[in-house]
Amino acid sequence: MVNINSKKQEKQKKEETGFYLVLPKIAEIARKKDANLSQVIDAVRAAWIKSLPSKLNLSKKEQSEIVSREELIAKCKSMGVELPKPNSKLLHLVMKYGMDSHSWQYDTNFVFKYRLHLPIRGIYNPQLEPTYDLFFRLFRKFYKGKVKGIKNVLENFDLSIRPLNLCSSIMFSEAVRNFLPEIEQKFIKDPFGVQRREHLVLDEKNGKLVYLATRKIEHGTYLAILQTVAYCTAGCARCYRGEQTRELKQFKAINPDGSESAIYFLPPSEQVKLLVRRWNKEKNPPEDILFSGGEPMDIDLDEWLKIIEGLKKAKFLKFFRICTGDLFLGESFRLIQLEFLEALKQFYKETGKAIKFVCNLPHPAFITPEAVYTIMTLHEAGFGIEIQSQTPLEEGVLCFQGDMQKKLKEYDGVNNISDTQILEAWAPSLARSFKLLRELGVKISMVADRPYKFIHDMQQSVSLIYTTVLFSLLSEPHIGTTDAAVRPTSFAAFMPKLPNLNLGFHSLEYLANVDGAHKTTPNGILIRLPHAFGEIAEYEEPLWIGINDIDTLKRITDINFWKKLRYKVKELVDKNVKYEKNKNTKIKSYCH
Ligand code: SF4
Image (cartoon, rainbow, N blue to C red; front, top):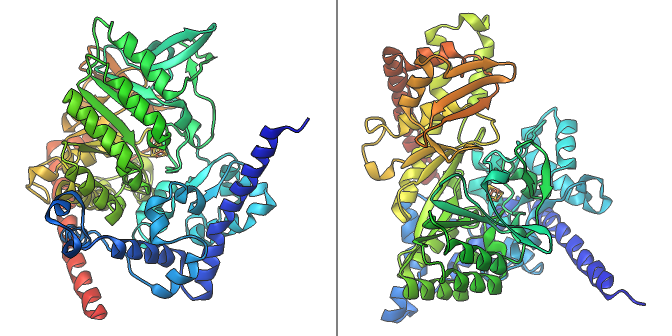
């Protein structure tokens, strides 16, 4: 008997294997023309902008509903968002591979086909050699002398870089580090506690445990993870759910004794139906639902339409939120598919309930013209969609603790580091982070809403002390900017057991001065802070001398030292601004 399914699978497999090879071919074409891959991507993007309707050809009504080319260009220029450079020769060369301005926006397979993808164990697949070579050609500089180490990581890592994220403004800034794994990287199991049995809202079907949502004790939100998208093509190398999205491990319940139990997922629309039924009977009901994945926007449109229908029956619902990496991480057009937008509009019309997109924004370079266009389109849809940005503070992307560590190592004896040396190690890294985060804040405030939330890196590549110091400086009205609109609303550390913990300078003072709040343990340091929930939140991280040891913490929170630190950071930020201004002038005069 012919196994139709296996034939079908085989065909799909062949097509998919083909996908892996498109990008290396395109990179090869670029190389022959003495150009790079980013210039090709930019050429396609520039053609996309050119293909947008001109204001002159739109009727008055259309002008209020459609974002025109002129409006987008003007908005990007005012925000300082880099516009891609046209290159008609490169564009024509790659169009025969289907990479054109039309597919850029309308082909839902575009990202799959043109991303730089190395699946788990892909480095052993001879067919994928060109992709593997391309990866090293593009990123060799980040792995100097560590090729063997990174091969070991890639063996069990699903690398995925979406085509937009290979554009010049991302590839030639720190932003690209968001997708590059570190040597000896290990994902922390369930750092946010969404798999803990005590937080799971489960049902039973045919004797099996079925997942409906996650809700931490008395928390006002249902976090509904949709199994079909536990994978995510955005490919953040330090993804908070990396065990599922990058290592493709199964989502299991973690029991209080540490053992794991299998749980099952229903199609998302059925999951929502069962959850809403239970929700409507809750005595202490949440008012908010947050859909999450991986990437919830990757589920089928038909399934989304059913989810939206199902949600209309949730009588306690006030806020409907979708957590997505698509807007800023290279697949923004998914958010403005006509039928999807229409369904949201109808939901709002019938229920009056607020719709929010919670968007992962790891670096200002991800505020691309494509993201700006999508936000403008969402706003023009006219039913009050809110964009909530969430910025993970990660090493090498926005935080530069590694530079501090290098500098601290140069000093004699870890126990004799002077105040001046601490200042010299900390201030340049803080100033660099500060400048990037301020840029992010300014840009997001110009196109959407206030920068919503900064999140401490859950994979522990940076100390909680460093990120809290950074946030404290950034939220201070006297450094760099006085405009409240561009300051972030909150800084949170996600706790495995309790709801998020919001932190600030006073948390550092507490840690430095209260007995038992900061403890050295065999694994590193243990931080114990009171949580508004009425319990003590505990957080453990490695010990980094000169960064998170108690002596350094006491020095930093000493008010005289703090004064010097913020002054020094301010000085460096100001200096840098002047330098950048000069640099821009030079670039301009060179271009014209
Ligand atoms: S967008 Fe979110 S889910 Fe996707 S890889 Fe990045 S952090 Fe993970």
